[in-house]
Length: 366
Image (tube, rainbow, N blue to C red; front, side):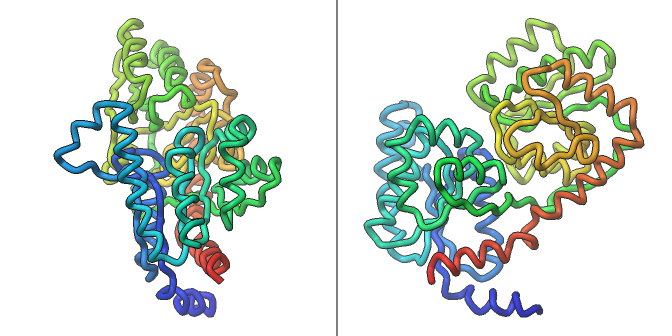
């Protein structure tokens, strides 16, 4: 055991951490990251309390989930009651998104921490940070100014926060290499995969439009679309109206089942126009999938063009299609790219970020 590990292990039992984040009923990057972080912290000896921003409703009131405004009121009441658990911890690790989510989830938590005198680490993940900080000023800045530390997963978000006068520390997202079966595709086939929720900023419609072009050149191509969201019916209608074959919408995929989805595919496609550090790209790297992605948010830091993936301009489905054609025509080069991507993803493992989190918890509570 190294001297660093000895220092870490000597402080672990004293730290009681409350992690506040979406529960897995809201399937998304924050919930997945929160679950991964809590599991690793618990394995390392931390006393972890989870406070979901979406607490379970009592069985007799579960029907309220179907009524928008009443659902929000009951959720807020139950959530604010659950925040009393903060009294019994040393530090609060608060996962944060933007806009209304910030007001409904982060603001009550920061307020409770102020009342109970507990330090807060704000772990901000949203790629919409710039717009959020610029246009929601009076609803955001007074609360951010109360937190002890700001952590972001990317250099991109660090620069956004710096432009508003905030110092943020970069600690990357976590991906478990043990979860994914890395393999080389020999040959690489036009079997495409999209793993983004079906919301406007992720432009899954552009992936479908690109696939339509690919299908014309490669009739045996397939596309699997994982995720759910407000654009689901619109996207399915596009497929029906254009008679696009071999598109499979698999809907919500639980974290335990996601590795099999990557293993069945050959090429990963991301078409987002607003983003940060997509966990799905890291997962694709871990599984050996060559990645094609738009060059937005922190993605240019994750992908070096034609070294660890292919970058394309946003909102250009034809560019995505051309990138797929390039992969299929350059099989050996693509195999090297996928191998390099697998190597690059190691810096996102717990072994590489463990000390950073441990040091941060120690700083925040000292």
